[in-house]
Length: 125
Image (cartoon, rainbow, N blue to C red; front, side, top):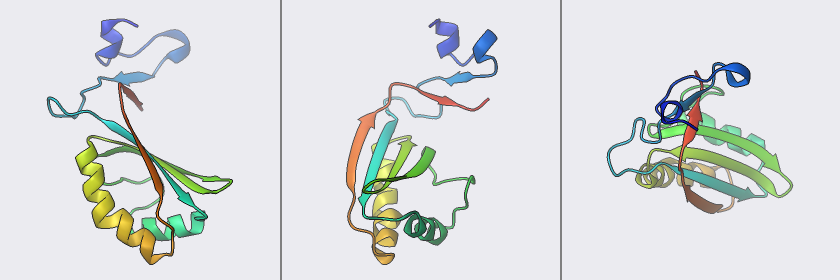
């Protein structure tokens, strides 16, 4: 991969239109983006939808400040939410202020959370 590609240029051919965001795009110096995998045991997508509504978000709409990307899926044991955040601190503030209280309100059990430092992430066009 060339330095130009990592710097945000578009690719040619089969990947035409794909853009690779610089690892520090939108981040402060010294800040590392993180991926957060949150597994809620026995939770349903209906409960998730209730939480999203309580947060004031809409499907395919904007998310929380500091959240770069978010998705959710049903699993055999409940639901899995995966996010990329600009920092662990931003995720923690949002988790403490909204995720924790709202998931508790709708009867979701405490989740298992794993965090990973993100080397790079891709964004749309």
